[in-house]
Length: 101
Image 1: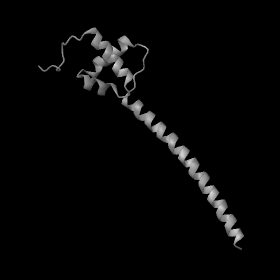
Image 2 (image 1 turned 90 degrees about the vertical axis):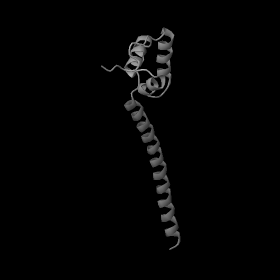
Image 3 (image 1 turned 60 degrees about the vertical axis):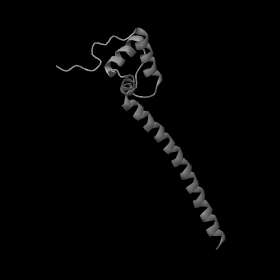
Image 4 (image 1 turned 45 degrees about the vertical axis):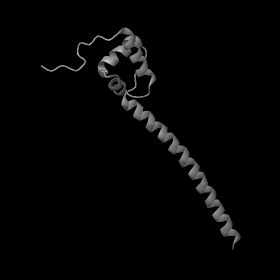
């Protein structure tokens, strides 16, 4: 019968609380923080819910979506700037073409 490597380990209350706080304060997924601390992600989620019940933890999908939204925002700004530049160049081209006639 195989057990997980940390099965049955009793962690000090201070470790639980500081681990939960660390998971909340970092912008990385809980699974990553749990791996860094060598604890099970489900255990860390339990501690977060216990010590910070009103906190909404971010999943890796949430973080990915935030990055996509930020990238989309930047691309829209870039598109607006390039569209404006193109329109200015069109007007300049028309002006100089008319002037050369």
